[in-house]
Image 1: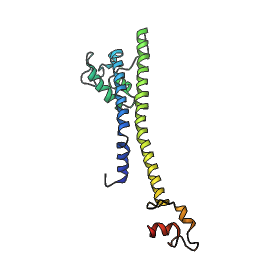
Image 2: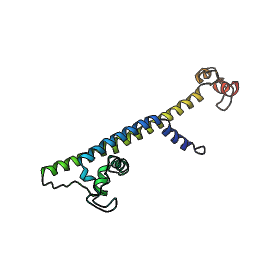
Image 3: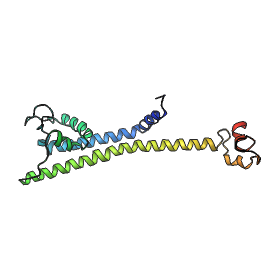
Image 4: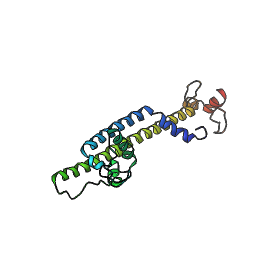
Length: 193
């Protein structure tokens, strides 16, 4: 980190708000857990491995044999799959809800599953991840403001006596040019202190 000031700023933008990021990440894990419990009980058939993603495609083969194994799948695949857990269940496991519902139970299941997939995508993939990105970007913004304020103070205020540049410009030598140090701020800043 000592060889690049940009890399130092990036590291500070992530490490400074570590408490906010940790709380937000913990909140995200809790929300994913809630989604997993709902899917485990309401959509357990959709959690089967029908396309052979986890080895042989067997009717009894499921990655959600327990709450903990299901939670690990939701945590990893729900975040890493671009469309959230719905894309993983549909594309990777082959459990797309049927569009041609022949019974009322199938219709309820299909609507519930699409609603579940959409809700997971909006809450986790869009809102939660953008909240984390927003915290980091806000930190970048506050660091830039702080650096700008420090530069303004260094160039317009004497760090020794605390007087502002305007106070010295009033008393500057009218015959002094910009490059000469005959009076005003330049004399005070460069020679007196």
